[in-house]
Image (tube, rainbow, N blue to C red; front, side, top):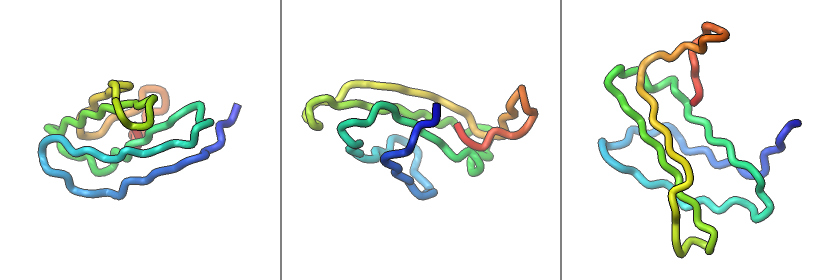
Length: 90
């Protein structure tokens, strides 16, 4: 089943300082049933780089936020074990 994109937010490639950087909030349409996040890995060339991402969700119009999802990935080239091709998006 194909999922049609209803709201796309693109954050341009930027150099960020070490530490925490907040983006948003981003308000999806009220009838949205799924969210997809894609991270372009082509600039993550440093083997010592660690990227941590955490998203928070508000169900009350932005008054309160609760943790929703988190991930962590390292820099450098990652190869897909099935295709043996470099992974360019996390």
